[in-house]
Image 1: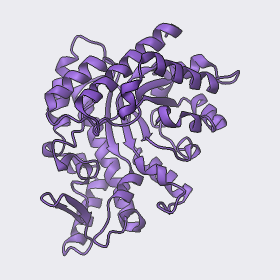
Image 2: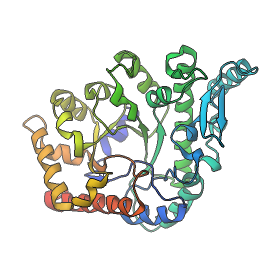
Image 3: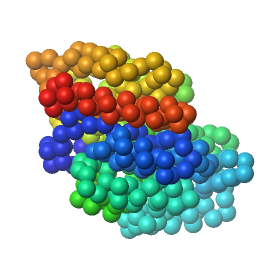
Length: 357
């Protein structure tokens, strides 16, 4: 709940948005796709097939104390036994205390879609009326569990590194938000924290407590002035994510919509306090080949109507909802990614026409 005033006034009305990754290795084709299929919500594309440096951990790992990057071997890990590790920590915390956002900049070689793509998108959107601009950062749970030290132990279990990770990602997000604002001045921003590892919460693969997860997710969004969201593309304890201070929950409605609807009271509280839902109903898998606007419309409206009731009117749900793919499209073929994006925007159009949004 970073920006209460924005939460009160901004109504997406089933706006089409995307997650982050695309399968193309060149920037320009992704810009064509974004401009055509996301008229209201441009975002910068992450291109993991372009370079190892654009993977979801390496891309945001730049400047992390103890970081070791082996591009040839495609390895990224933390080595706290480096001779200058203490000095790196000192410089890091000095930058955090000074709010030195440039210290946490994402370099052009790690984010071509940001540096090349976003300014070019700003030119393409001139004369149109986008409503927000979206960015994305790997969330602290997934980053901390996905990145290991030299003994291959997840760094989130090291108290020092856990504190470093959440502050590091928070500063990366704040730097990115300023970049978005420079390219699209005057537009609200939306920053997603991608948390695929939340599917492991409550299992033997994640020993973090509920309270610790909530603390990390709340801290990583501090200081941002735009909207924030958390994206999880699998099933998890949705009550935990709905109990954080993020503004938006993005979930895989295609596979796990019925699971989320089990948390009705938590969803009602979340929406009544100004939260948003992003329904990831367009599958980012081979299943997209057998779906069309009619089938996805039927699936989504059935879920929304099931959630609605006297204390949670369908109109409120529709007005505070986004429509998205179920996950990033980076693992798809370019042809399937194009189909995913086309279905997303067509579904938005169908919903708005049907419900008069």
